[in-house]
Figure 1 (cartoon, one colour):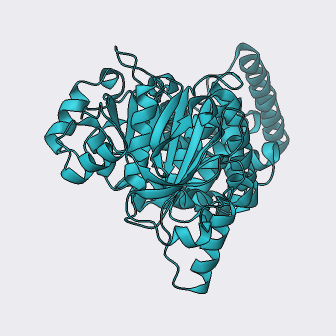
Figure 2: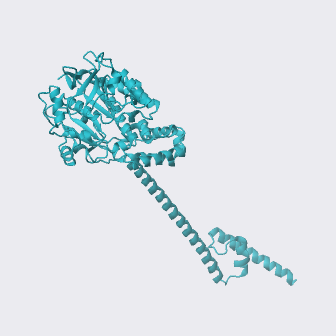
Figure 3: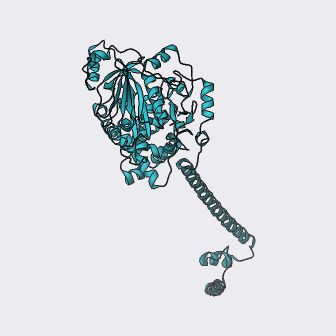
Length: 518
């Protein structure tokens, strides 16, 4: 199988097919709401799957989930198959794995804070340049100190540490203000409240699980339940951009393979580019330009080609344009720009035809074997072989239970990382402070006890000298006060000195008395 049937065009009807070897040159599916973009996406996903190419697609409205189920096509679909000469048209389910960032409608998709990186995380948190700088310092500090950043509580622990030690952090890594850190802490709280917490953690997504085939060799279609995720447009676009970046970084160069290794459908593509800073747009442009050499094809799905920057739009070789309605000057300009992006067909006016297309019809131009865009054709899109519309909750649950990867991702793993390490470090520091305080208290008590004992000893000594009143004033009073022996037990030297002093004293007294007698 070297091509994928997209539909038929002309009279008589001739097949319009996508060349698998050129499918990694990316593509665009555009058109107003209700013109058939989702069905076209489903048709392409089925075709890639039958060719053995795994697919990833975001299901924004829930309608794409029906690809996992067989069905009984209605009369219009059977009629379209007959018109296109699809003699072997028979319904069948497409092998599918459901994913959900919130873990409700599919297997959880997780990544770590470290893998997301400061740049994409800053976009997700919608921070200022100064705050992004502080976030980059938080990552650098965590790396230097061997702190794993796995989930949101890890990042919160690092930010708390920076706030408590802002002077030391600023001295080592550059100025970090308390205001910037406080703003990041508030943004982190908002991120938690928006429901992003389940997205960060382990086990982290292994991209190889997106590139599986079933036992018959058909590529598995990975459907991301995005009906809830799309309510947070920045989170939706940042997640898909992270996914593209991871594919670009991890996959090896393969050049132009005979068929893609993976095809990535980016629904509501305008959200990726809306309000994106120039540096991020440059990154997106580089990823789109270079990822095809990794064997990955990216197909943007949006209402208007103008939603895609020209630098990216120029790299989309395979194009399917459904109807656009033009009622205002800006809408007319959009139709004109869309028409001019096709290689003209002399059989009709492309700009006029865009407004005349019916539901299930599209203008299609693909790259041929040589990589040259074909002349645009008004094409009847072929009918899907799987169910059009959403599957039921019971059908989704059965598909999820039969998944080959569920056992790996459904259970959360919370191993030791920055939060636990810093919590233990703080506990050890608190214990050390408590031990030091206790030791200081014990030392103070000992000193107080010693001082009290000394006071008591002096008091008892004074009380004892008062009770030994048999001594003369000469011995215990005058001489004792002069030579400092009162109230203390004298040493042998002091005793001898006191004896000599007393004898001298007696001689002086006797001398004085003798003089008085004369």
